[in-house]
Image 1 (spheres, one colour):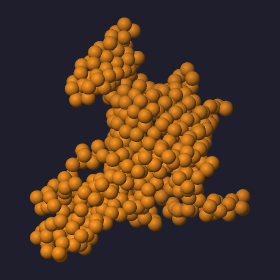
Image 2: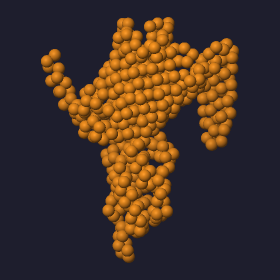
Image 3: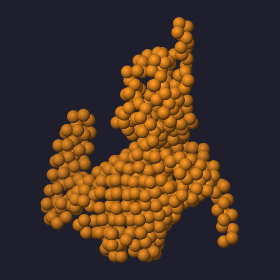
Image 4: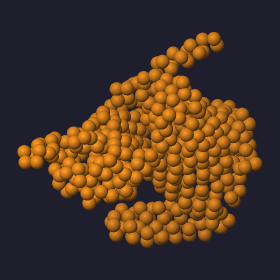
Length: 492
């Protein structure tokens, strides 16, 4: 035992300069302070603690686990498509202050479809659209004529507008088994106002592509054990600066900014990023997890994730070892018509990450969540015949909606609308609730976090909004980088 501190120090030193592995970011988890290792009672168990897959179809099921029957039923899930967008809160506020409200819809579309290539059109700065000349050759003249423009733009000078997107094409989580395939990309475009001409660029772009599966079982009462396998590839592109060529006009002696050269260069480099991702080498890793139910209200958990057997994109990966505890007070739960789940949790995360060994609160996460049925299933007390009619009506309504969507998207809109409507009808037919609302909050690494979620039509459609922050400084509380996040998914 006396050698344990020495061994732990050796581990910290070993992983001090290693990279972090691919991380699926669930807003449900980060929005409750990132404390989930011991909770792990749904599909997100696949990403944070595979042992939690053993709890699916057991929590809330009096037949399989009578002691935990007071909890709402944790049912199997299949999510066909999920998408999330991560936008930097502070940087967007700075852009709005300096330039007026940018076209955030256009920004989100670019992020969602991994189009980080070029963000530099004038619509980003609507306050100065009449000031910025169409011919960038005359930009220096405009800066002299409107000195307030240059001074105001300095507020966003070299401010990295870090943004990301995450897309899952299939997620399956059922009793003792899970599978998912997902992509996550991030980039940080910026502008350097400069003395003579602006410089455009972005900090490193990172794209992770992952396919993973996991299995779980209960060797003895009150214990759950899980193991997962993942294959991943990563593409990193180093920081890139674009300095426009300066051709001096002998008549006016001013530099010329070639906008076409800028656009072509950045778009060309981004095309290489997307193409080279598929040429990157695959790496194989594994996840391990365990849960122990101390009492029917208190559970402990631990997970060791991203244990890679080879380098990922040429970098060694630091495994993520986390431990945690949670409680679900029986008096706050309900498994009735108005189902309700309430969890409190605390985790100590990234224990092996040697880059934050002196920052205790950067490892500490804690939070709570409440999940409440607001509009119960309209078919719970109906006969099978009436439930079946809900499925038929749902398909018909979906077909009508699909025809409307089809005006813009052709046959795909019809298929999507009919499919979603039919699934919703079936979910109502088997007792799915019309509306479920969840709220979470906590502190992740010392920074506040929250999220608000909605499950519609028996969870056929899920939407979630929230915010959390990451530490970017050398000590806790020095430089919190906050994200505003939105998630959307369709499944059954």
